[in-house]
Image (tube, rainbow, N blue to C red; front, top):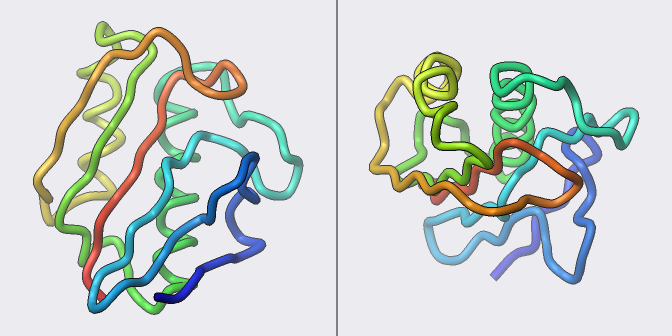
Length: 123
């Protein structure tokens, strides 16, 4: 098992790692739309926030030695499922390999975020 950390993605805001490599897989923690340079949530719309969350996932996967094309499963959490179509428009630009996915509406996310994305990827 190997712990992954990069300054190109937001630091963990709790007792967890940005990602763990186990065997040939990378398991990322959920990524909310925090800009790692400012430490603030990036954007106010679902599109802006989804874009930043995807960038954070990509940075972590790169630090682990992989990339977004090797993602096999995502779990996505939306504050409002009414944002589903707008979220998908951003998501499909990043996850072009169309990994397996679950997507849920949740009552709240850290720092008032509208979206959180976690992934499982191959090395």
